[in-house]
Length: 406
Image 1 (tube, rainbow, N blue to C red):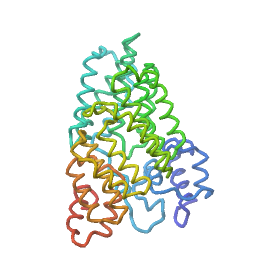
Image 2 (cartoon, helix red, strand yellow):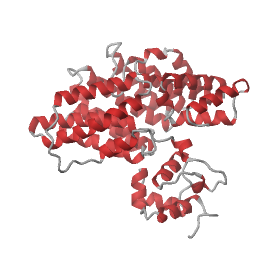
Image 3 (tube, rainbow, N blue to C red):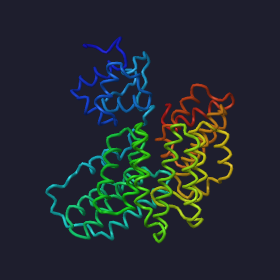
Image 4 (tube, helix red, strand yellow):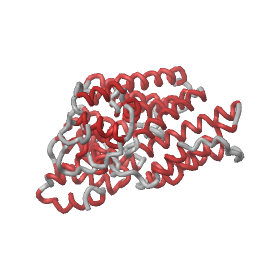
């Protein structure tokens, strides 16, 4: 096939893959699918992938114009849909692939490394520009965590592995929703490996919580549910006497099951696991918030909004939203994400002006949350195509702030 013109989407994928000398197993690994799945798409045995998967394929193949895959005659920049890479992404990637095989530096001080990690989490939750703030800290944290694991023995190495898992959990927050799916998989896998080597059920739970999102976004629904439930079972023997963080992680994993089932349209099962998560949240102090997951009593109302949206029950979602003052969500990025979810509920009801107002508030709350949120991007593109009659200028202004219009 000399040129992709006139070919199907599958044939175009094959053309561009072969142009750069990439095998099917490599492409499949980059997008979270098997080589057989890639072959089935290329040969037409499977239907054309949906937009999120086409974006992953385009990124993996180094394609900047989605029209090259779809055959559309109009240029459709991948970055408009997939988002642009954050300025610090290259530095974070370099740190993740710096194996320090010949390092002679002294090992890091573990209490100091833990304090730096805790400070980074605090900054992440408090900052509207959280991705920029965390991106400045992550490269050194990653390198020091790598070095600590490599240079220590015995109980110190076990503690270093716990810390490394925690650093990867923070890195997961940073690389998520950026055009770097290979890093999302890398970070999730490394976090789980370090947590299991540390033989720490709480660290395994945190790693599973991150991995579930990756599996779910790849369409591996059954695996996502299995990972969450298996990790929750590891925590259960300790819940009676363990600190609040253990119960919170168990509850957060229950909600991840609920969320996954809601994405599959399983209404009753989704709310069953939400109830289990809510029961755990009610056993925690009213002002408690888990550092990694933001799990606590306040966030359960936000989770109810998300389930309503995923189950296509916008009325239920908005009733749940009415029970929560967004300011009760202590984490600034999580508050912005909640506002995006409420906007989704209004969008499902065709309430375009309300959608715009919520997205605008989300942007003013945490610009670096909404800028990398695919749902927000899709809603904004829809609003640009059909703006509310009385708010065309406001739509344009927000689109410019989000980098979707010049």
